[in-house]
Image (cartoon, rainbow, N blue to C red):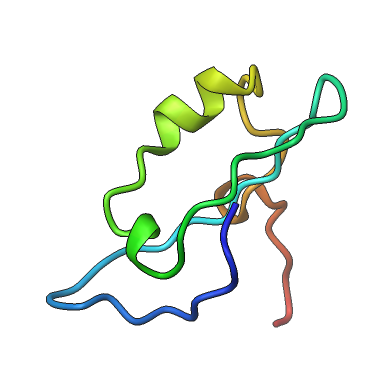
Length: 68
């Protein structure tokens, strides 16, 4: 976890993802230094470290809506 930092990559074009995970238990997350600690963050290692498994929701998994 880190303090909020808005989408502002230091260079180039980047994709952002939002994923919702079910926590198997209460987790005391490591606090990252901010903002420097977030640029090379390894989300796969984070998921594995905290035993989160597959996301239960993300915009890509959201049901399609019509008329919007």
